[in-house]
Amino acid sequence: MNESTKLINTAHCPDTIGGKPLNTVNPPLFQGSTVLFECCEDMHRAQSGQYGGVTYGTDRLPTQRSFEDALRDIEGGHLCRAFQSGISAITHTLMAFARSGDHILVCENVYGPTARFCDRILSKFNIQTTYVPSAVGGDIVAFIRPETRLIFLESPGSNTFEIQDIPAIAQIAREKGIVTVIDNTWATPLYLKPFALGVDVSIQSVTKYISGHSDVLLGAVTVNAQRAETFANYYKTLEIFASPNDCYLALRGLKTLPVRLKCHEQSALRVARWLETCDVVDEVMHPALPSHPQHHLWRRDFSGSSGLFAFTFKQDWPQSRIAAFVDALDLFGIGFSWGGFKSLITAGQYRRPAGSRYAGRTVIRLNIGLEDPEDLIADLEKGFAAAGVVDQSSSS
Ligand SMILES: *Cc1c(COP(=O)(O)O)cnc(C)c1O
Image (cartoon, rainbow, N blue to C red; front, side, top):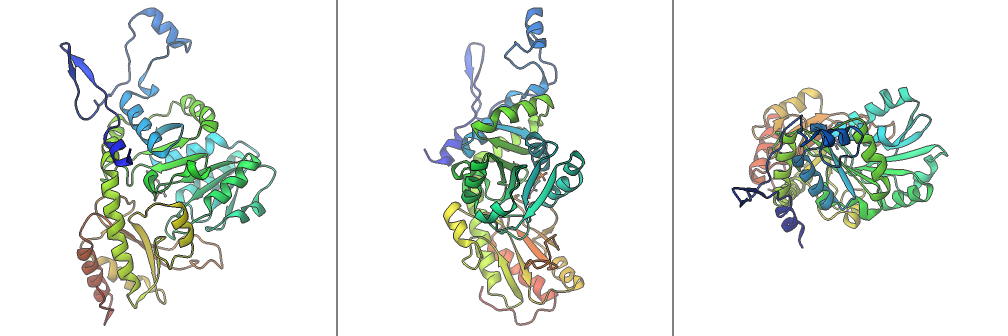
C-alpha cells in the first residue's frame, strides 16, 4: 500500500455509544492525569507493576500512543516515543544511551542546541564529544576509540546541508557495537528510511514538517528492536510524556504530510534553481541540485527533498546590506524554525572549524512554504533590489 494511503488510514479509535458504533474520522483526544481503577485490587496491581493497562496520565494516553504508532510504522522502526520538543527528544536520546566515561561522535553540521548540550551538559557527566566532518563517511573509523559508544548524525545537517554516508557509517558502527542516531527532521520518514540504511535510532522534530503549521512543539524518537528495551525503560523511568493536544495535532499533520511535502519540495527546487542563476549568489546549498557536493549520496539514499535550503552571497555582504535585503521581503517571515506553511528566512554564521568552506561565511537559509514559488521569487527580487543589486539575472 502506498504510504499516503497508509497514513490516511492510521489511528482509528472506534468507540460505542448506546450500543451503536461511534466512529469519528479522527481519533478522540484523551486528556488526563488520574485514571480511575475499577477496584482496589487493580490499584494494588498498578502499585506493583502488574496491572498492564494505563495507570496514570504519564503512562502515555491513547492520543499519544496513536501518534507514536503511526510514526513508528512510517519510519519502519520498532518503538516510538513522543517528547515535548525536538531538542528534548535529542537530549534524552543521548542521556539514554551514553554513560559516564563514554565518548561520542557528533557531525559538525548538527543542530546548534544539540552541540551545546554535548558541550555543556554531557561533559558534566564525563561524556566526551568529538565532532566529525559534516560529510563524513567510512573515514569515521579514524575517530573511533575503544570507549566510543554513540554516533550522532544529521543528514543533511543544519544550515549548510552536507550529507553523510549513512550506510557506510552504520555498518562500521554495527561491527563495533556503537549506537547510531540520526536527526531525520529534514527528510522526514517519507524521504529517508534510516532503519533500512542500518541506523538504530531516528529522531524527528515533529515541530517542523509533521505538524506542519507552526502551532506545535513536539519531538519523537523511533528505535529499532535492538535498542527498544533500553529506550523504553529510560522513558518510563523518567516519566516523560507529550501533550495530548500536540500529539493530536501531529497525528492530523501526518495525514497531509505527503501532499504538503511534495509541494514544499517542488517550490523549493524552483526557488533554488532560480537563485543559482543570480549573479550575486555564490553557492546554493540544496542536496537535490547537481552542484551539491554530496548530490550522489542524496540520490542514492533519499527519495525526495524538502523545502529548507540555504545560499551564500559572493564576497559576503556586510550585515547592513543583508539587513536591507531581509527587511525588504514581504512574504518571507524573519524567524526561527521551519517546516510550516509560511516561508521564512534566517541569516547567520555557524560554528564550523577553521578551513571549512563555510567558516566565517554568512549563510542565508530559506524555509520555502506553501505560497506560489513565483510570488516568492518576485519577493526575493524585491529584496535584492533593496540591497542595491542592479541588473539581476532575469532568468525567471
Ligand atoms: C528545529 C530542530 C530541532 C529541534 O526541534 P524543536 O522541536 O524546535 O525543539 C532539532 N533538529 C533539527 C534539525 C531542527 O531543525
